[in-house]
Length: 87
Image (cartoon, rainbow, N blue to C red):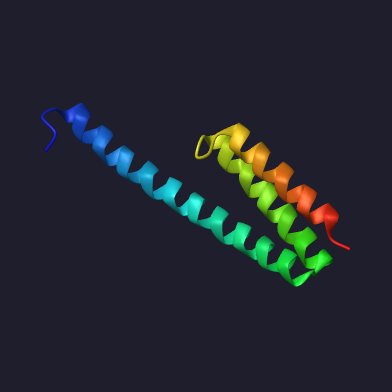
């Protein structure tokens, strides 16, 4: 239990941020799974669209600090290479 008013406020704001971050990470995982499925099925156009959505979401979460910018960049790079390798 918080002892001061400011600690109480921080607790509330931390809970809000935690919920937002959890939702953002969950969305990233879903988008990544959609891309993986499209890559596994060999559907290039569907994978391209999924890659664009995931890339955008990674940039937005990196901008707000949910994931580190290097992590977002690395994921985009590796998935882009896999997309380019599709026949």
